[in-house]
Image (cartoon, rainbow, N blue to C red):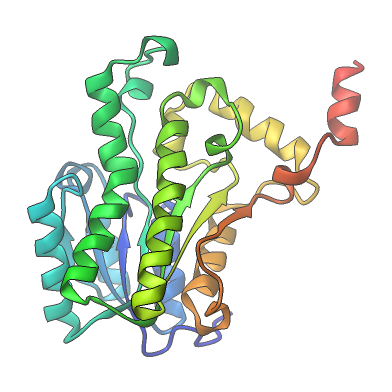
Length: 270
């Protein structure tokens, strides 16, 4: 059901890869709620994914962008302003990558060149995007930026590896830029700490099925799906949440504040 929550709003969606992506589902929901969109992803991800299919569905242009490149990000923001004839009202940052995870390197043995690359793409890219937007005055008054995170930024999940470090930095950048952009132009910036979700990227983490099954048993409401997350992002882009900023918002069915559940206790007693 659509409520026209984003009618007349314009936004940029980073990171839609395929139909499993939270970014993909969020783009669909934003479109249903009346928003105009621009889609972007890394050139290599665009070759691997199906973003053009999504673009056709939501009537959006696709602009390649390597978020580790200042030049690419600046070009993207300028093209977005040209396309929309002005600034945007919301941005979704749904980007994460760890070469150490991909190559199965243990956290204590991380390759630091890989770590630097992963942090640049997964976390510093948010700083780069927001800095470029501020320089170009590309986000409208009372605009909203959401970046997707995970509770491994606060708690230890061994096989999440250096992505935990990346998410911790991502959340810190959101808080700090939330202050800077809030004072300057009433732009709000938040992170959403989502349940473990079966996306193409997430499934690459070792032991991921175990993550999901454990979180399901530890969450009073169960795991939040990618569709649920898309709906939540829509509310954060809407005018209904104008005074929410600099927050890390747990969207995880209650997992983050549950010590233990009866289901887990019973599992341990078997």
